[in-house]
Image (cartoon, rainbow, N blue to C red):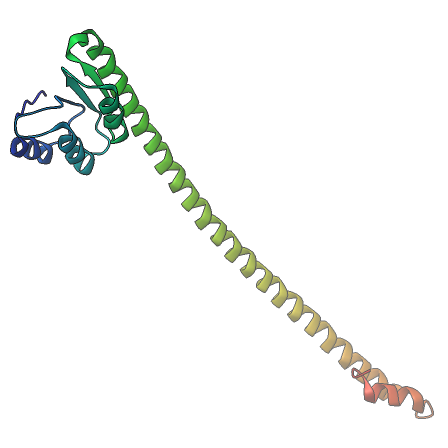
Amino acid sequence: MLEHVDNKDDFIRQLERFAPDLILSDFSLPSLDGYTALEIVREKHPEVPFIFVTGTLGEEVAIETLKKGATGYVLKQRLSRLVPSVLSALREAEAQLERRRAEAKLQQSHEQLRALSVHLQYVREEERIRIAREVHDELGQSLTGLKLQLTWLAGRLPKNLKPLHGKFRRWPKE
């Protein structure tokens, strides 16, 4: 869709209605200068390519427009450069959009990886706790059984083996 505006109010109104694929602007408009138009576009739709098409634009002004965010400029005396400039600006905008999408996917992947890492750490800790409980329970049962058997065995030792009886009474403290 092609829209044409020639004043600031219409320009702002059109930008609020939709995001254009590309903006071609003269540098000097009756009620809107090129820098203001560029500033408005960068505020509302920073990703939209903005090309100045003007009759006179000195080298310093051209460089300044690029610094302020213009995608390019074409002199009216060289309109044969307009189509290549537009195609280049659209390709660049598409590449930037793809890069932003890829960065968003990468960010999402990083967040998923972080969440997975946290979950894995939680699972590891739970597994350690479970194993520690199993080892504790199993060793506790074994030691209790061993103590019962030693107590039984101590009760069957002959009374004349007093040093062994003393050991049994002090066990497991030693």
